[in-house]
Length: 58
Image (cartoon, rainbow, N blue to C red):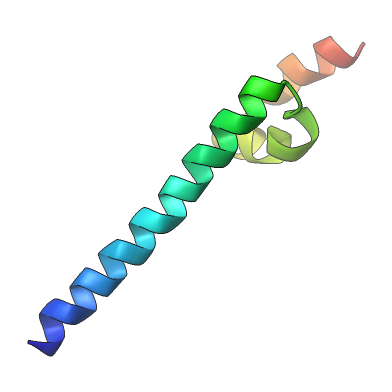
């Protein structure tokens, strides 16, 4: 029974973190202020994004 509770707590925490990140990303996209906040994470997952952001700044 303890193993099931551990798995449920882990999955619940993971879902809460992912849900919060999803909510934050959608809110930032709607407001249009995400370059400074989400930029490093976007570059981490998509290296070509750095080139795209550099062109926009110029």
